[in-house]
Length: 179
Image 1 (cartoon, one colour):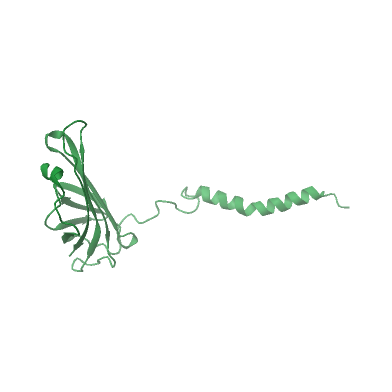
Image 2: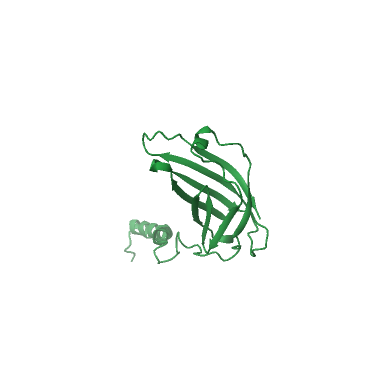
């Protein structure tokens, strides 16, 4: 004798049909929790390949024209001279426009360089920030003697204190750097 109603047969089919999406949803919610996929911070914590980026690079701007009277009045402009990178795995440092810039580099895993730093304006009437958003061009160097190239954008922005009477200054220029 058959005691199962047609409704329970449909419930059983629905449960079987929903099993896969429910398992997928649970898996997605537990990613990064240690219960499966390691999640967002699963990349390398140090550079392993293409890490020989330290050294002196010839810095060249695609537009080397003066930045404008407001920036010049503050004594700010495009950096001159070489871009000298120091690398203490994975930290990269350099100094441009009297500002020490710091960032991270992970080598062949991700060839990006993002370096940031701030410097107070004279008389503490605000500050200016300098940043380099750049990318090592492949192949990234494995030896200090290997040629290397970097392309990116240099940005300098003045942030005066409110009503400080400081001119507005902002510079954004594309650059290349080679060694």
